Each structure stands twice: as structure tokens, then as C-alpha cells.
Amino acid sequence: MICTDTSALYLNQNEDPLQGYRSFSGTQKEACIFRVFNKGFSMPFTQTFYVYQYQVVDDSNGFSITRLDPINLADGSTYIYPNSPISSIFYFNSVDQAPSDWGSLATLTGFVNLRVLPSQDYGRYLDPAHPQYPTPVTWEVIYQEVLQTYALLFPAMTEVLPFTKENWDNGTMAAMMLQRVSLDLWTSSLFMPITRDMSNNQIALIQKWAEGFQKGAAGKAEQLYIQPGISPRQYLRQQKLDKIYKKQTPELR
Image (cartoon, rainbow, N blue to C red; front, side, top):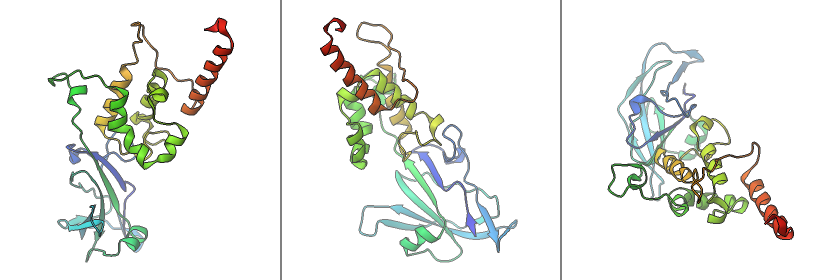
């Protein structure tokens, strides 16, 4: 039996897989370590296995199957998966032929899922050496480059908190975004997105956008602070109640 605790690996395009993958920790990369057992006992000697790569493709089959070079594994061995093109790739180890039935394969056997995240060109926003730097990172840029995908994939999110400029383009929401994309929260359910497929460049773009709220319109520093325990929806509800209260109480305008 072959298994691994690091069965979900994340890597950004152009990152060196020799440096490890992001799996259990958001701040420290780690190797993919295999446990190999024979009749329930740790197998200290090596055995040859074949690695089959199932890569998600846009066709009727849904996957392309490639057999990689054979590998020798013993209990505790590490294996370096290649930094393939942007995709979600499943790897299966076998001593004989490639499994063909994807349905039973995914539910009855072990696999490693490598998610290769894209490396977008945001030089005009992030790179001082870029000829168009500094192009302002506006809410429209954040929505188009980052949030629009999640609005399409998870429409329930827009029911809770619509992705509109009125709701999101302010210092409080920027602070919430900064907290949720922090790699310190990688192992928490609070990490955004829950699918953990936001690239390093997209996170840097959000951070750059949030920096724009550190100074208000009058040039005064605007503190990016969220009251502990308050959700975005609670914040917006309170903002609406405050506006209603001020309309009803003219002296507070």
C-alpha cells in the first residue's frame, strides 16, 4: 500500500518544485513524503512503481493520461513532481498498468493532487521597473482579475455579500481581505479562498489595492482595522443602520 499525508500540493507557475510544495503550511514549503507498507508493515526496501499523470483537459474524456518514468520508493521516500503547466493534476502510483476507470480510481485508491497556479503579468501594478508602473489598482481591477472567478464559481457568495464597488471599495473591507488572504491562515477555514487556488500574484494585487486605503482623501492615514468577530455582512448591515439613524437625526450629520 502506498499513501501520503501530503496528498494536496500547491505550487505557483515558475516556482522550483525542488524547494517543496505548499500543503499543511502556508508559510513553509514541504516535500511530498510517501508511506509504503507491505501487508501492514513499513517497507524499508525500495520497490519500483510507475507514476501515472492524469491531467485535466477540456475534451470528452476530461483527462489526459501520461506514464512518467518509473520511481523507486521505500517507506519515507520523497518524490518531486514536475512543475507542469497551469492545471489540476492527479498522480497515481501503480506496479502495473494505468487505472482506466476514473470513478473507482478517485474513490478507492490513493492519489496526489498537484495544483499549479498561474503566474499573471501584473508588472504595471507591482513592478517599479515596469514602464507603466505605478498603474493604480482600482476596485474594477480587483474584481476582474481576482473576484470575478469566485463570483461565477460560487454564486452563493454574491447572495451573502454582492461584489459591488459600494460594498467592497473601502478600508474596512480591504482590511478583511488582507486578513483572509494571509498565508498564516492557510490551515484555517477563514482562509480565502477556501479552495486555496489564489496565486501569489493575485494575493500581491490585493495587498497593493489595500495599500491605497492607508491614506484618505484628505491625506490622513486611514487605519485598516476590523472589529474582532465581525463578519462582512454584519459590517454592511451596521453601515446601513448608521446611515438611516443619521438621516433621522439631523444634528448628527
